[in-house]
Length: 393
Length: 124
Image (tube, rainbow over all chains, first blue to last red; front, side, top):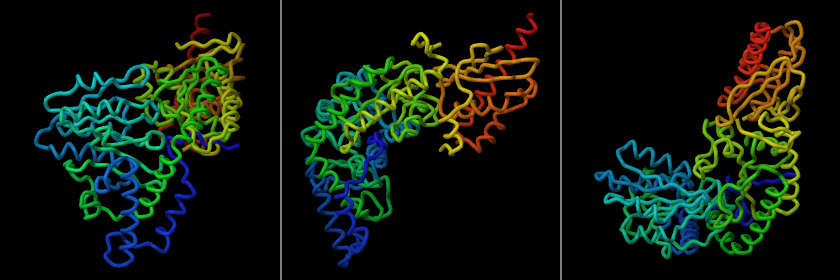
């Protein structure tokens, strides 16, 4: 059996999405910037897709700017906002659990003379609105807090933070890359000024994303070289990608409630069984206010990458927060931010379900997981099979 | 990423597990770094007659140490000490660059075990 439980990494393209894209990958191949008929057809499809996406997040068409994906959207939002304020070299507030696309952009800005505060999260994986409020300085020009975390799925109090930012006249950006498929978003009601999204996280194609930029907000361009996207983001329009993204978001939003309920049921069944049937395991991050498709579990006394590869040999695809899985020396910054001891962070595995995940697949995963944890613990110098107990040295 | 040979050894390691009658043990690394390697050697007349290991470590650590154990069995202590992680990596037909350090653990743990053994011999 093959089981794909890495939907936070990427999702399968929905068949209807491919169908919607096909004309723009074949006969209707025109450049959307061309003024001839080929171009006009492509431009029309892009305009329609832009309107669809805008409507689904409560924005207007002229506030949606297509990019190559979440990483570019995050970089554009952060660097673009900073350099629109370049003579001030002001202050940015973000959190310690952001995606590297965000954190490396803020680190880079620190090198350019900007100052950045990283809000801590609590043991459940949430940032406190009060803390954000306290971090605000006279020169704070941007707050960026991810909508939902990519590793542990915890959903942050975005509307509350948006309200505070709006009251203080501070720009508010959110990386909604993980959240789009599970949470209804209304940028106006939530006081969001900038929002990053990426199509391949909601069964759309890879290589296409968007940045919502509230009308009137000044943002320096990151990618220059053309008049595309109203001269704010250069590069030939990815017509098929854009059409696919709109179709994927349309489907995700239309089926959100039903999908969420189904996935949540399976996810909770999985967590309950794993925690009950495999000793020395625990859930990383709160179970409440968490993306319905995310489970992140630490397995004591064994190392995450070897769990990942053992499951892979059984046909099950997951991801790990261990240092070894990324080639880094430190385990996941998100798991460490939960104040999970470093040894236990090395043993964390993320299981992310998809719309087509079945109970049979979860049962198979649990069986294989039991086998591989038992095997790896027998191989571990930190676990005594006879006594059934482990210890960290 | 990992080649087929590495994955095959990881799937079916031959020398993994605790050894009750070991002549010497060597342990290196720590859990906070994400890897611990413990090596058991059975030594008779200065020759390694059996070797096994336990690990809190990744695929590369398991595959490279299992390979190293296979390479040192039947060798004298001095011959075993001459085997380096580069020899192990060669035997595995390569490891991803960021995983080379995992293969060093095997070499270090073997050195540690042999040093412990020789230290104990001297004390007797």
